[in-house]
Length: 351
Image 1 (cartoon, rainbow, N blue to C red):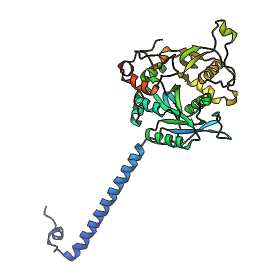
Image 2: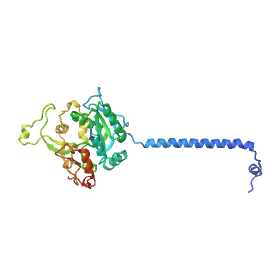
Image 3: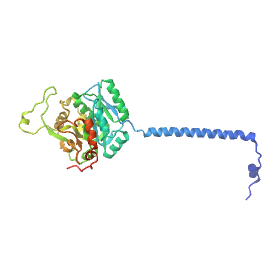
Image 4: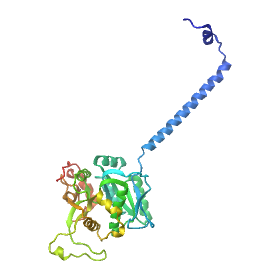
């Protein structure tokens, strides 16, 4: 069917008028440029937002205690997270490993990050995903401004710390340990909470296998157990009671370099008031005394105190010469070069 004359005339016969077409062309050109600018700006904005949304929240956090006096060095009250992500839910892991460290131990941390503990966030994330374990260095505070400034630089570089609001000194290790368990419980929904020192060589894969083992007792105190003399008052020297001299067993507790408490045990510690705890000079003895009072199940595992790397060793340190590795900065690197330490396959734990 032929086109109507009107339609044909409007498409072909209308004469071209430059004076009328130029404004129309300029209008379309301006619209096109504006659209391009708008689209490019939107792309940049969306790309920026995408990058921000993919930035993980800070892994290093500071925990203080919600009390009438935040300078309570007993680590009492409820844990409050500062300088980190706004955690509405606790992070779910199978085990949380708190590596106890201090301001004089930067060399140890450097050696650890060059051996079994990844030094980058992505590496830590992969380790957590493969083992179900989260790792953080645990440290308190100091009035030394230069040391705190150095710590802030290290946090900015590695982002692998959990800071507790308690003075960092050897005499307060039992208080720091209690503060650690309370802070870890507030941040992580974990089946086990592991206290480890920064001078041991650890196999995270084997530790994961050990913690994943089925247990019939919900309150478990897991470590390399020892028997020894009890400590009475922190101000007094230790003594050996008559029962010990007669050969009777008592005060079964774990060596301090590494041990683990199940979630039910830590939950019980969290709700107790701090002034109900008896503090001894030694941190491992203090924890052991609490575990006796709670009537937990003591699980002895010698792989947690191995003097050398074996196919089943989990934690290697120079027992009984040192409470950890002797000269740990160098020894950590030496052990990591041994195939029996870093590359041997993981064996199934003994029942």
